[in-house]
Image (cartoon, rainbow, N blue to C red):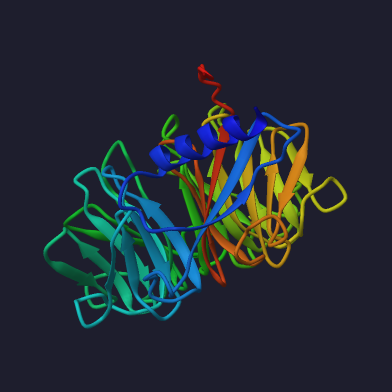
Length: 339
């Protein structure tokens, strides 16, 4: 009977993945648990531009967009891979950040400025247009106003579609090397992670900076994410710090985190927090327990720079060795008539 249920589970997986989707999958189906995890890996052998992934985003049609180190941008629609490079209009083939606006335009932060792709034409913005610096590390879009915020090596630039405004340490920013941005859609506050200066919050008028002196694990910030209750989670070079607006809490390897250099943070629909680390794989935290996934489990590479959760609550991990998708399923027991 066990084998019949396994067959049904695999059939269900095939339906979930969808027709025509070319995958190479590593299956992890523990007999003792109702929960099943399936790892699917994508590399250059499948169509990915390069195996070093800096960022991932997913559009409303379910297409995955991958920013790579040196290979440009790869799009995956579930069956076909398409790569865009400087030959197509991308500003630079090193792509560190991807954001998608309400109109479906894709914004790419590169080593040579910002490129916007509307599905047909490319538009690039550089310091000549008003961008603070052409090395763009992070992008966030304000849902309320539509303003685009760019974290660069020379400060933060805001673009409202017509005008550019730049903020630097002269205005109150902690450090001009801005590595991460998150926007609190409830309050409108913008949060900026920097490379050595800690975290700065901007409410539209006033700047507030938080450092290790306040409770931050490290002043080098690589990632920021917000959960539904409004907690801010910071991936740093000294572990993960959570800020609830009043109190700081830090988690590190002593608590169960895989590695203290945290490059990516994401929150899934169940409220689990996912942390991509530098060499330790991925750690999941459900606010009580820690679970770590590495190459031993099916992750393609233990150096994880990007995490995104899709609409079906599957996690995508961008690593130094390709992309891994983690599907988590539960047994589906269907009636079976044995004659």
